[in-house]
Length: 192
Image 1 (cartoon, rainbow, N blue to C red):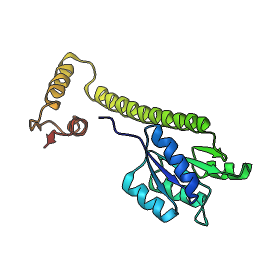
Image 2 (tube, rainbow, N blue to C red):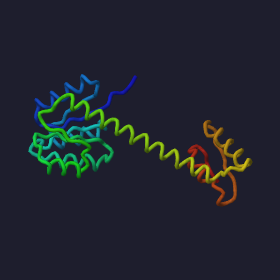
Image 3 (cartoon, rainbow, N blue to C red):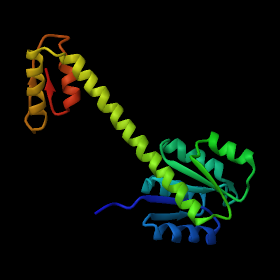
Image 4 (cartoon, helix red, strand yellow):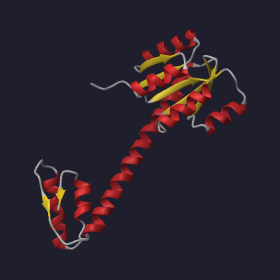
């Protein structure tokens, strides 16, 4: 079963928060609403949402502070600022604090869907790029360790076969031969 994407809405305007929650629930998101910064931070830590929608003024507190605190907790979270102000200074400040997008009230549901879709696509791309970079780094380390000689390719194949098992493996060799690199890359292997 696919897990629904979690979204946290931070807005003390009950009517707006309910409207957004209802709209996003119909789009098959798992939505939680917070009406204050403290409640938002507590829910954020407990639920680990993928996306947060923050009104610029919540509970008499600046939504910008909430944005800043959320980004301190988890820099990779996507945050969209919601505001009735179209002041470029607000947009600039939100962007500087780490907001990924900005939407002004009144909110057009189609525009909201489009922007959320783009933010989620960007998150997926970021995650894929991070994973690919890690794979390239590991492969580069592995290639640098083993080279291309037939004997080293044989050692590499043996290590790859063992890596997919739960067997405990002892790696022996002279100092500087790369035992630690092999152990690091294959996790289950113990070195001496």
